[in-house]
Image (cartoon, rainbow, N blue to C red; front, side, top):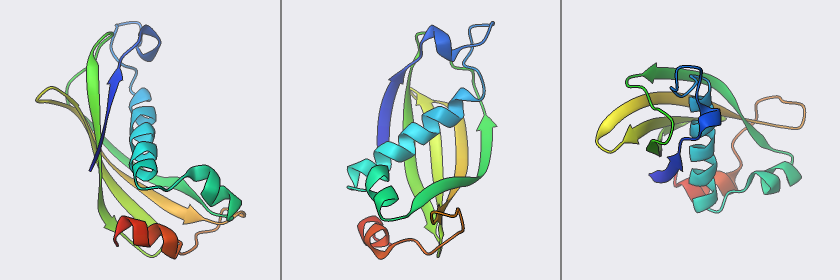
Length: 128
């Protein structure tokens, strides 16, 4: 599991001072990026090898609002790994309060954006 902390800035919010719903996707992306980087998997290196990961599906459940100046934690873990896909379980917490949770499926693609097997070097690092 990986965790990042994030402070909410005014530009993250809507006119009501609540985090704009689409921004949660950015926070989850940051969480997945940190998860990979903590394991030594870097996007720019994969791109050099002709691979990338793209989001194929996002299921999000909004539970409690997050507001300007709040500090949140984004938790990221893998639920399962397939031949070309990885399903992440992610949640945003504020202390003990669950604010948002998601199941995000990413797919490994080649330069033509066609699904391909996850490279062994990635699977080995993920322990899957």
